[in-house]
Image (cartoon, rainbow, N blue to C red; front, top):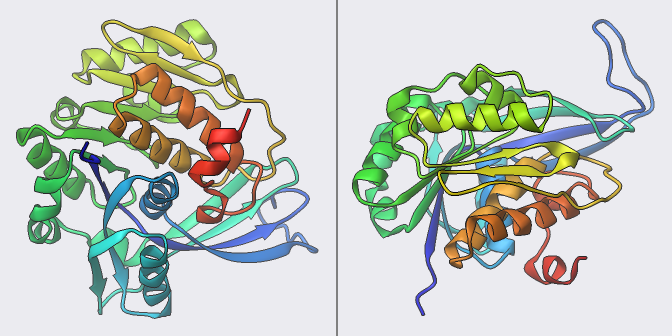
Length: 304
């Protein structure tokens, strides 16, 4: 049976991470942290997660023509990702994220987007072959919103499954929402789009119902340690999380989304796909870093 093809359109960053006892307050300097430099960016994190889980993955992104961009391209190839549409920008630097992680695995992140915000609809026109060949497309919001809207409209018109992880949170047009097969959101993102504050299970359901009314057929709201809500016209079900000791939550959502894509492309049900994604995400938070925390399929399959 033909392996279904996944296309990720999104960002690539280099993450510079400092682990500290606590997150610094404004004006405070925290001494004694540990420093790591890791490949990151929501799109790249998702693409690497998909590759490590055995998915057939092509990645569209734009990096600078600098050492960070060259390193990213090499790493994508080493992971087995199709890099035919990784574009290089000679005028803008590669994206960089500065991340502080505290002893409770909470983080704060500042991003200089660089070439990521130059990934344009014209670039995607050059990558139309990748859209045509894909069975499903996964995107996030660390690239221009007009590029996301262009891909969603083009792919949906071709009958492709379009999945959006609307992170970082921002308002979305109803035209974009109507072109989606599935949207995966955390509580903050769900609150922004639905206008409903999530405080418990019932308010999470109300938020999902509101998002469905805006035109999205399938909604998954991740609820941290409480698991995830799966909602459509036939399903309203909570999926439990796996209990682990978290050391770094950076990229946990990205790895969740990558795993969800792999499971869906294996023709698993939406509920079973979310269970697989919860398991994969749980493993990732026990490790430091973004792409470095993405587990391989053999690790997920034996995880209980």
